Length: 251
Ligand code: PGA
Image 1 (cartoon, rainbow, N blue to C red):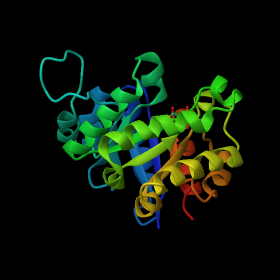
Image 2: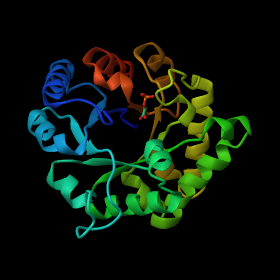
Image 3: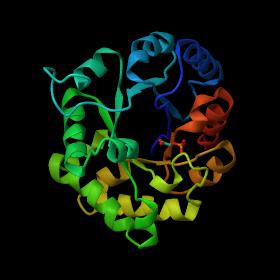
Image 4: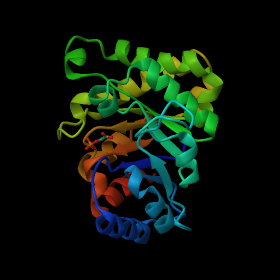
């Protein structure tokens, strides 16, 4: 059985004191015996600090991005080795804000995914269509291409340790969530694409939904067969909403 994963993508938000309070609140409310895993994804400058405040909590730490290259003369970039050294177990690859604002294409995302795996990090591959692509009926084509680029590069067996996050771009930060039916249909499609290569891996990989998940829509989303948790942006910045979402994922 897949254990649900709830990941808080803090994006470029917060300062040390906000983060200290947020982590303290999450720790206080998190029941390490619950059948749900928690992951927080702070900005790079705070990784070390968050790692120290999470110690002994059972809550995982991850980076929001990584360089596809190994250490060297790459000003402003952060390597997989550095993330590991700071206590990360996970890292996002291909978040739509990276794809859109930083021009990351499928090949770059696949290279980042491979670099993360090679270093021993668990990559969370983000996929999802733009509104105009959905309106043109191209959602499955886009998601197939984004996932296919990674599977072609690393091979299906490498996906055993990975997570996929379906995040329709039109639902991110807009307050407009995919309906449970819309989300489940794409999640099932992603799982069937993986199953074409390996039914075992397809059954293991956690597929998270992301895009305006809030406490009041989380229960219905997480009740869907192929939705194994969430990648939470805005609602992960408040203890109450993040933990209410985490509680919604506990069967
Ligand atoms: P949101 O962001 O929950 O604020 O829509 C989700 C994400 O971008 O990961």
